[in-house]
Every structure is written in structure tokens, then in C-alpha cells.
Image (tube, rainbow, N blue to C red; front, top):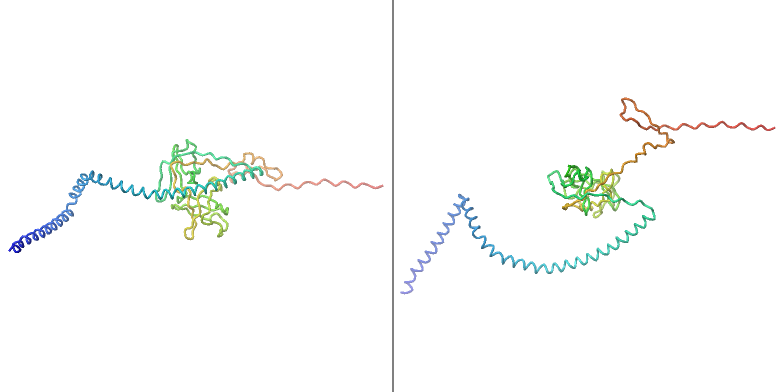
Length: 329
């Protein structure tokens, strides 16, 4: 009798559970439909709930963050030890190369003294700060806080401690714009250090400009440029000073590109005050007379130059009369 008396109670409990589950399901469906229809109400409620629970979440998250940092610090112990070993190895290698560089520098100095060569002049420079960059789809430029008031002129080279960055193409009184080597309109004469081969560095709005060997003339051989060769600037045309490091040669399929040393400029750069020295002023007026150079006056409508020089063949020398033969008695 007791067993049969407990059975209706269990049936009522199971029915209550099933009813609760069904009620929760219906409530969830109603909330989902209401959320689709009135999304703003739920968004505001969610925002208020997050504002209320934010302090509690921060308190709960604090020990978790501390535990995570502690676990990362344990892993950094081994990484710092390995980095220390690598730095010691690199430091020893750099000291060896420093000794080689110092010995080569002394040797070159002695050779220059023996040859009585003219030392290279120290190029003056202007230190400027980068105050803006423009990376539009077809323009890669940089803005400096130095202009004509500080001696910046159009065409000057811009570099940093790593290498060449670009050149000045627009100047104001207090600002100047730099066209980068990666710009689509940038064309710079360069030289491959290993083979002394001239080339043209052409920007195409990618981080690695194209190295064009055909535009510079001559025949390109397989040994002309190899991956890893250093690329330097040349003084061809007086556009840039010679010997500035630019980058290294890299392969891109069948094309050769240059990975720039100064791929991204820092806060400060140097504007190199470089210019081709003018021709001597007395060179045009001191033409040797033995070459037959004489000033002439051009025609009225043919030229606007006041004085020009033309090459006239030298006149043949007049031979002296031969002496009369002496009479023999």
C-alpha cells in the first residue's frame, strides 16, 4: 500500500519537471523572436548588464591575469637564457669583424697616403623630424619639419643611419615633402657593389623596388647581380651622392628586386646637402689658341646666344725661303 501511495507523487513531480522544461523552451523561443523584432531593447539591456557586472568581472579577471603573467614569466626564463647566449655569440662575432674593419681602415689610410689621394669631403647634413606620412594608393611620401628657411632644397637626398630613404621633391618655408624609393614615380641610379654594374632602381609602390639592369645600358650577365649583393647609390647625373647604402638584391621569380635597408623611416632623418660642383668659371675663357678656337658672332635669327666658339682649322705655317748655295771658286 505504501508503494502504491508514493507513485502518484512521483508522477506529479515528473509532470512538473516536463512542464518547466516546456515552459522554458517556449520562453526562450519568445525571447528569440522578440530579440529579432526589438533588437534595440536587448542591446540596451545587454549594455546595462555589462556596466553592472564590469567591476565584478575585473575583480575576477585580475587573479587570472596574474596567474597568466606568472606562467609566461616562467617560460621567459628559458628564452632569456637562450637570448643571452645568442647575444654573447653575436657580440664575439662583432668584435672579430671590428678588428677586421679597423685593420682594413688603417691599410686603406696608408694606401691613400702613398698614392697622395684627395680625401673625400664630409657632406653637410640637416637633421629633420618626420611629422607625417602619406601612403595613398599611388603616392608614397613623407613630410619633414624643415624647409627653405633651414637650407632644404629640391632634389636633396634623405637618409638615416641605415641607408637612403628618398629625395626632396617639394619644399615650403618650414616643411618639405620626400618622395620615397618605393614610390611609383621614383627612378634612382644605383650600383651593385660586387660587380660595379650600374642599374636603375624603379619604385612600384611595393616594399621592394625593382632593379632594372637594362635601362642602365650594357649586357647583363648571370654574375651581374646575385641575391645578397649590396646596392649603393651613384653620383650619376648629380642626382644623389655616391656610396650611400640602399639595400640588398633579392629574387622575385624572374625579376630582381632590392630589399631596402631603410624600409621604414624613424622619427628623425638626415637631409644631405649634396650638389655637383660647378664648372670652373675660367674654363670657357682660357681656350688654347693652338686648337683654333675663336669667338664668333651668330646670325640675327638663327641663335640667341651672344658669343659662341667654333673650331677652325689652324693655318699652315709659312716656310722660310731656302738659303742660296755658296759659290765655290
